[in-house]
Amino acid sequence: MTDHYDWKETRDHAMREADLFSQLPDVLRGALAAPGYAEHLHGVDPAAITSRAALATLPVLRKSDLPARHKAAPPFGGFVGAPTGSFGRLYTSPGPIFEPEPAHADPWRGARALFAAGFRAGDVVLNTFSYHLTPGGFIIDTAARALGCAVIPAGPGNAEAQFELIEAYRPTGYCGTPDFLKILIDAAIAAGRDVSSLKRALVSGAAFPPSLQKEIKSHGIEAYQAFGTADLGLIAYETPAHEGMVVSEDIIVEIVKPGTGEPVNDGDVGEIVVTTLDPDHPWIRLAIGDLTAVLPGNSPCGRTNLRIKGWMGRADQTTKVKGMFVRPEQIAEIGKRHRELGRLRLVVGRDNEQDVMVLRCECASPGDALHEAVTSTLRSLTKLGGSVELVAPGSLPNDGKVIADERD
Image (cartoon, rainbow, N blue to C red):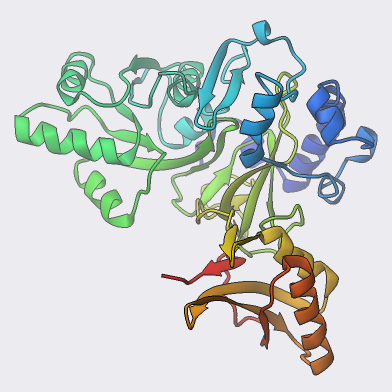
């Protein structure tokens, strides 16, 4: 529980914040050399962005917008200033979104996650993430090799070939989806094949419910979860404490109200926004569309970085009402215009074969004037009529959901 990758993982919170935000101005200067960032961050003074509050004033860059931007200005939408040929590998993921891999060691910052899961130099790792065009396989491959492990680039599928690799190389570690690990174990039992060398696993890319965790552990494999994306690499990882996920070092993670760049209150569910400090390919406030919440305090494992609960759903809750799109940004704007409101939740349903909207607003001091004003703002922003309910503070779920579509 006290075995850590390096000193950074246990440093004082204030020291970490000072380190990250001392680097950020130079990273911003480098980013602004790329035409996409020059346009997106027009007017930003990098020297002034030295705190979380200052960072929160910058616009978010939405991952959902990247495919259109990459198509308009291939390959990277103008958000990469370095020459394409200076990178180690070049990938694509659904969208399509094009991702360059910096040429330095552990470019996706995955070694920490493997170390926390018990992987060590000299281990043999069976990597079943895909190596075909997408970065998934290489995120783990580069991390494991940076840690000093030997990697079997198995990729997914073909259980028979996997058994031959496992019986020949006797890997102690598995990396891949939890679903495929279960498939391997079940198929090995049915075929009488020996996969007993596998003792630890780092899993990602699919749900890992407690029932499956228990089953995997019953086969003598200690499995840990990691959370990341094809563009950012590893964002957070589980540790021996098994209490949430610790955010990786050398990145800045914010949790914001869906559809905005405004940080949520401590403990509230919101959208994950990530800033990376890699000078070759920085991301500045990339909103990835996934929801989570921050856990209070430090992990019992001794790591002192921010902890998140893990993946808690999608933030993009845009829906269509009476033929008109209603977006989380519009609901967030209502909160900005009426600061006396707390959490907001637009519930969309059906009544008499017609779409209906009800905006529920937490409010400590409800009144007719406020009710009328919010109703007017709802109509003005959405161009649709809807009713408003002012409810007691704390009565709406803390699940990050801004728009709840309850139509069949």
